[in-house]
Length: 115
Image 1: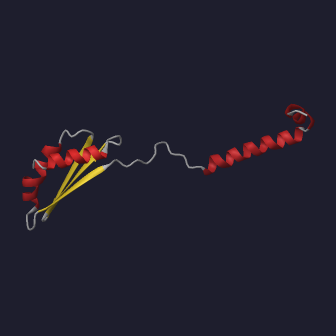
Image 2: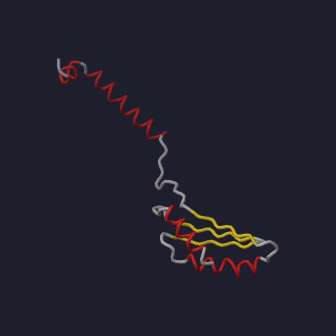
């Protein structure tokens, strides 16, 4: 017997099979999480500079402004965020998702030597 002959001889089994497939599809649709856009974190490099007992304004003027100028225009760089605190500064470089981070780290290290 072929598949078509079995389907003709047993219509209730075919209907039951189709109902099971539809039911499994509805259950899967309700339980599988769907996102319009996946959660993607951009790669970052953070540079922390310590200068004991220095005021935040002095750190910003002497360190952060120079670092921001040097890193501006870096390949794949999306944003630069700098923060000065008492005795230290933190500069966060945020890159696009498709950036080769090994190469970016090398470029950052080379440009950091200029400061």
